[in-house]
Image (tube, rainbow, N blue to C red; front, side):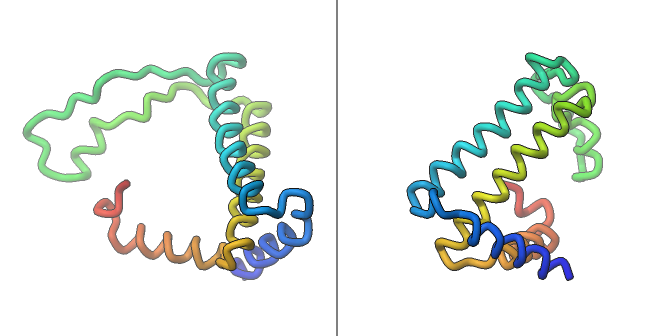
Length: 132
């Protein structure tokens, strides 16, 4: 069922994408969508204030022996929670990112679902050894 939803989304993107159907248009729109997601998160921090960043060098003791133990020393540096308005904006921008990712798949004749499944299998099989 989930593969059908992904395939249908990719088909709808193909039907809707008329004006920006060139590979160059798709690549630049994908880049723009990525930037807009970044901007929306930054605005949650700098404009709204629902989020904040508290960044510092991660201090990992020498005696850490396992990945589980290492996790307690890691930090994403993000504080707070998205307010409903910022969440809505970020979800909208991420939707556009997915739209142009599907468009790129279309123009390259790649199944978005296959990309998702391949990445899922690599991440679940290799686990932490797949970190990029």
